[in-house]
Length: 164
Image (cartoon, one colour):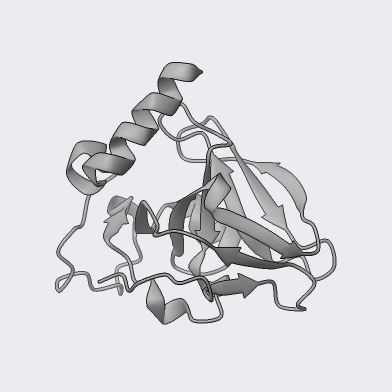
């Protein structure tokens, strides 16, 4: 279960050049098992906490944005530290929104244990040795926003979509 984010919840890249703070609770935390996340992270999955972009404040440094593939085929922008090249967050074209939501890489938090996954996605391509039998929310590909997101965040997402 996701723990409370406070004004002291911060994170950054490996070298410390990029530092950010979070000012609200995440919309959702998901663990993605797609093959692209596996390739791009060099791991079996990526754990992303989705925050409204306005709730992620860069305190020091800046990022380089790199366009990459995504499972939807619509692409993503990965924000990397220009010095150590660690991926700090991504912006995906998710449900019609590309810049309004930041997918914070949970491993870049000073306290990543605060944000365990709420849902596991793209599990049809998970590594066979990953055991999700104890997880309560596991989906083959992607989740239904109406089921996984809070009503408040889902309404905010819909409002943002209406403006596009």
